[in-house]
Length: 271
Image 1 (spheres, one colour):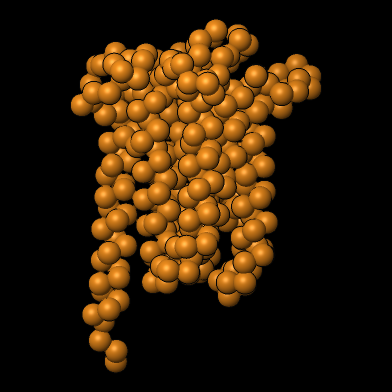
Image 2 (cartoon, helix red, strand yellow; image 1 turned 90 degrees about the horizontal axis):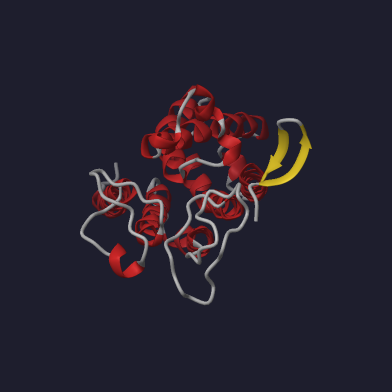
């Protein structure tokens, strides 16, 4: 496995991380455009503008959170720009999108909640595909393990420890995101009809997945100085990683939001 799938010329090559992000975006975009509700919310031209802006914001937000967590790997300005080598936090991308996209939607005069509810259904597909890119690149790797499905990296360019059996946490994350899409599309899409509930449901599912899988990751970053633990038996501790604290807060707020929207909609007095 290698982060570089195809070398083109000089510094130009096709990297696994970037390729799978593009694949995920393409699939999610195709499905979203085919959704019958899309035409009542925005035009094809508006959607193209939003996608361009979203990709830009997701890269910046994902990179910023990664740099905050992995600042020891950044030695100069050029290191900050090397996103083709991996190093994007999906949590950072998600947070930046949900903070900044509403402002852009308002500028385009597009129903904010309506669009975000619809986009939330297909967002997990981008996440699921991107994690496969992480798997090839060796970033977001797991802790040591003896399970039969453990993976061993041998390519020096991989971000994971070499010649060591570790959990394929990238695949766990990809499967979790795929499960989130199935739940969003075939259960929540029908059950959660109130505006804003689908957005909250997606944030709840993705934060729950990150919180759980992080216990098996070997690259956890803590708020306080804590050594990275290498085995599952010693990995279980009262200390939570930075991403887990963010996920815990996000999950709680999302669940409360779903419940409050439901309560408010039931108690609303018709005019």
